[in-house]
Length: 149
Image 1 (cartoon, rainbow, N blue to C red):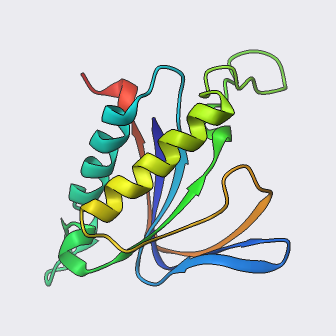
Image 2: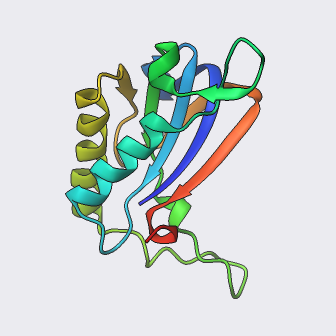
């Protein structure tokens, strides 16, 4: 599973001009399930994200997790995080999970975040979405389950 996390002061997602999800201070999480991922991977990635200390403490250092600040999450599915750009000019996406697996694992990831006590709003899986955000910092973090043993 791949996550692109952006620390935000606010973020929202719309489909066909209608607001479907938003958050105030917290994280915008762009989420991509990869081939071979399973529910255990989704749960591990949710736990990693919840514990990631990328929010400022009183001294201005990145020393707090989203759970420490009471932040929210806007989780948006984004299969393009699986892009393979090693050759040619058109990215390949064959390493992304099949759509039915991607949906199941994205929804499991969202459920895992909620079970950790995080308020989560979402986009609509597979929809053409417009995402707006104010990146705080800016802080943008890449997490890939394949990069950790």
